[in-house]
Amino acid sequence: MRKAIVLLFVASLFGLSVSADGTWLEVSNGGFEIRHPSTFAPDTWPADWKALNMGVQGRFCDTDTARTGLCGVRIFATRDSAQTLQQVLANLPNVGDTIELRYWSKWDVDSIGGAQLVITYTDATTAILNLNLPVPSGVNPVWTEFVGTIVVTKPVASVTVNVRTTRRNSRIWFDDASVQYLPPVTP
Ligand SMILES: [Ca+2]
Image 1 (cartoon, protein in one colour):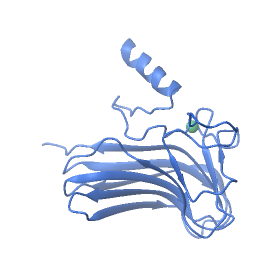
Image 2 (cartoon, helix red, strand yellow; image 1 turned 45 degrees about the vertical axis):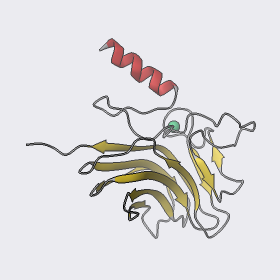
Image 3 (cartoon, protein in one colour; image 1 turned 45 degrees about the horizontal axis):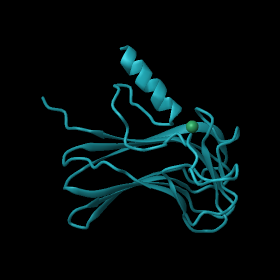
């Protein structure tokens, strides 16, 4: 029991997440608590996430962005195209597993976006789970949780998580993104 508590404490220190049953979740730095080691300015990007097509007005880790811990992330769209933080997951699920994607978000007026899970199978086909904000969304200043699941039907080559916004001048805040692989329930 004490070991579990220490593990939880260490995990929270490093921004990792542990599910209620103590298993490790698949997203690294899903709480956005760890800054990229090469960064030097206060508004640069979180570790383990790759910024794609990102405008300079995104914001990482300040009192404006955190739902839990000290940090979250805000994406400010400067173009009408997807602006994304992306992470390719290190572990792969098995055939028959259910993948559960969760994140928390709040957003500015007319934001379009959310989180997306992209599964690429070894036969080169893909399955995509989109957890988008309600549209038209208006303003939602309250942190809101989104949860979605998808079942793995074939051997998997890669799993990628994207958090993104796609409309110019929209702002979306993210925190506590997680992915869990849930094995089939045996009777
Ligand atoms: Ca956080």
